[in-house]
Image 1 (tube, rainbow, N blue to C red):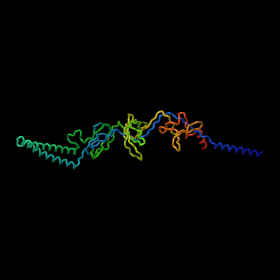
Image 2: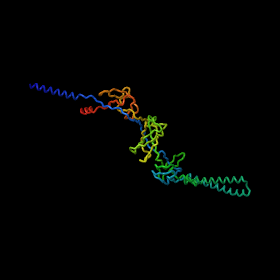
Image 3: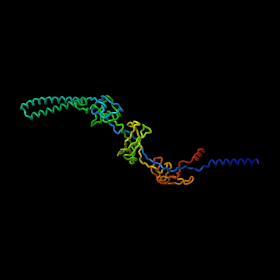
Image 4: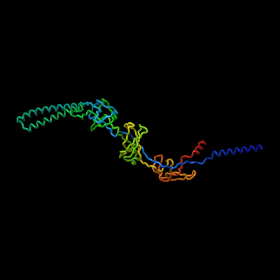
Length: 372
């Protein structure tokens, strides 16, 4: 009797152990969640990186070489056309000065000689001693000598002072604003030496002035996208220095030639930016421009994450629910995508339930956590 009880207890324990292991190793069938297609608007965009710069920006250059004698404005000042920006004190070149002074002396001697001859021949002509032709030749030489003396004196004045008598508004020692706007930069200081602008030399920049009310976006787009944009395309410009603010812009320039940068061909673009009075936009702010490449309204769409791709053909397909945890494959034709949602041209309807192939039910997840 005692042995029977012992063997019975062992048998019950063995059955319990086997049942426990069986329950532990058995798994519930995988249950997949589903989602339905929906109607939405899809906008495909690309982003161009660049900066905002003034539409009009002018560098002021001196007309004579010399030393900055005085600066009348500061960076950030508002100026109008003709406002005096700086004056230049001419430091004459010794060789040029000596040559000009020598030319004046030579011209003065010639003038004195021709004047003496003219005065003498004038009296002789009035007395009828010499002919009219001889007197007119003397008068011509005298007038020529007087003009040469004036030219020599003017050249000397320009070398010494940068301007000559009678030059008026063309005085070369004055640097004046050529456009109305804001002084962006004054790279020189009083006492700095500057070089004139001429055919052979760009000259020293005295100041940079720009109209800050007219700004443009200047950026670059990849060659894969440049063929999809055109003049007049609407942009949304975001500035790195001004958060949560977008400025509308309109594309007005696409470079006809690309440049290679880091192995990719980039094309320069420009767009007129519409500003407002909320923030002051400074020249040179880094910026990104969202460019709408394609837009479709009210189209049948699904989340792009629901797509699967055939391993051999790489064609897209989805799995559509046909029963309780039963699915069938449906090939789909795709339209545009914004990276999150994709347009469905054919293959499914708005009533279909599409398998979320990379996500199972909450119940299965809880079971996995329990096993862990």
